[in-house]
Image (cartoon, rainbow, N blue to C red; front, side, top):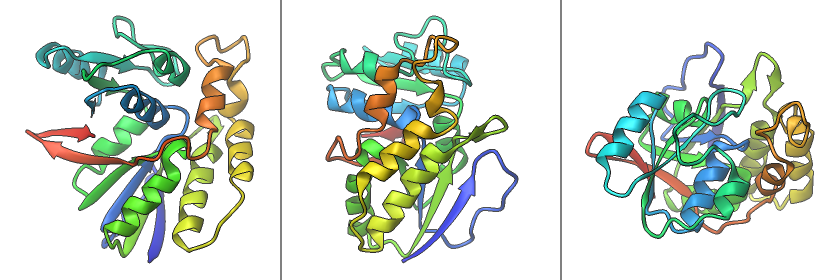
Length: 228
């Protein structure tokens, strides 16, 4: 199995032959998506842009919305912000969820044409490995979404490192990858009073390696991306 990496916010040419693309957003989009599915959401509909997400929410019967702008502040008028700890206290009872975020969702939309597409975070890393192996993938491209001008993105790089190491057949210590999430530029903002919408409880969930036993495959249904 061969591996490559792209950084969402850099000008890079995608690899020509990657059959599987894994878009990583540990803090917090795809941790939030996993929490919502674990708590009973029927599906996650990732939509780029608040207006488009609000429109889809209005069209889907019973839909709820999750949204945040760059930096983590919630989108006004959405049911939830992009907060795993808040979502962990919610029960979705089979309702669909529309998600719009500044990094992870944008990454999925950019690579929507991949033969196989996964959303990934540390909470479902080993399950993502199992799904990739089951697909008989030969070329895997990891997309790092968390690197920005003021952020090193090491939370996502750590997740890619962990998944790649597992795919190579090794059994690494999960604690070292969780530590990198906490010590990343963005991770250090959680719990800081200057960032009131980044609670420490979110960071603890995001750094919970293999909390869930399911992956987040992304499909296209009726022209829309869907995570089930």
